[in-house]
Image 1 (cartoon, rainbow, N blue to C red):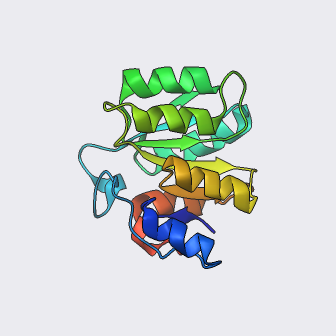
Image 2 (cartoon, one colour):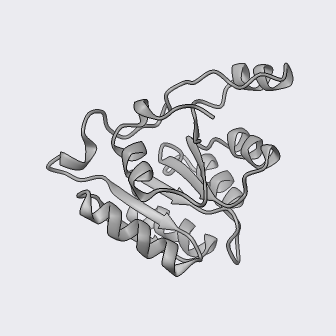
Length: 164
């Protein structure tokens, strides 16, 4: 189940009380309504070092009408974030050269990038990893294995996705 929402003090006070953070829509969602059917499709950066995962996401998102660019490590991902200015970044955690948490940290500190909606899609499913993602400002956290249909739906209609 994905986590999504603002990373504010309310979330951390709920966590410290042993409760799940309340579901809050992400402050950076790039568009409302049916995003895939817009005349200007959303641009998605897929940053993952597993070529078969990248291709699976790319093919499925392009079928939905999104424009997709890719990067196979964190350093290239950060460069593509700067050069491509995507609406959404789908980011793995475990990658060579720079992990996804460091990419996210740099992205949120950069005024030109900080408004990009970030979905972490990773095998790192521990509570600590999810909490670190929230602290760094992730908008949605999904774990592998995943359903391409669920990922597409979470991009098209994030309000329908249940909180973690």
